[in-house]
Length: 326
Image (cartoon, rainbow, N blue to C red; front, side, top):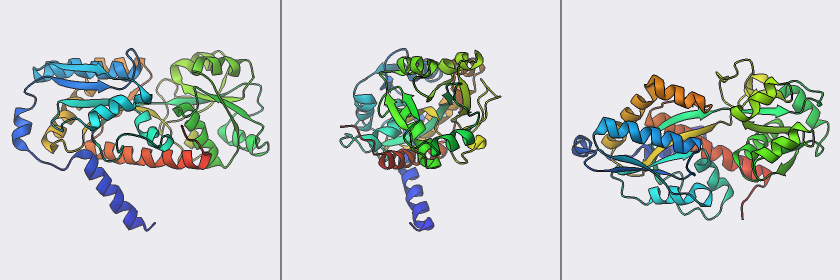
């Protein structure tokens, strides 16, 4: 593809994601009634906690009720679909995890257009995962792990929380970029996979920091790298995968704030300003840090560009790995 053409397509996608309409009147009046933040994940998880933090802070800021409403099912597609088809007036919003960008790579029958049906408000936070191995493996770095697997194609087994989950794709992205072939073992959740990793039944796994760090600190697992662009404040001694031997690698979990496509730009800007104020609050930052999340707080344009890049990245990884949900 011509670079200029690719850049034009990205620019158009970003404009669509941030909403092209302008309506100063709507911005001045908004919100005039209750606002819903749809949560496509189950109560109690990180994405749900973030949505409820926003709902409480927005209610106080706007002087109007703002509620977080769980609409779960179909791997977050039910909640996402509800927002994609809602009136673009700022009264139905979406707090989504990274799965929203992964779903179209794995499913043929997504009931909405992920790249076109949402307007980006802000990239709320990023959550590093850490790639860990059983300490019996004779490797200590990502470079050594890649060389080890390359010399043993199809002989290194890695686990994940399930087929098509982000931990699965996180390792597949590594394998794709490093040109190595490992064998995936899908578990029903992280815990059974972690149990097998700790006993040496599998060699490698990607998992969130709160789950993996106690085992790393206890010497039961060896860390190879965190999956974000920057080191984690929770474990600054662990390098990123990119700096440890695989430049350009990045696979964060994240939370993002969206409105339906076509929401007036004035409303998007007001929501972005309100969201940034929430994320600048020291107590809220502490609450996020306790879950392993690190604040991003982007502009709509920055988040839209990131979101489009995530959709494209996971589509490429899934295609190369032959991963598809039926």
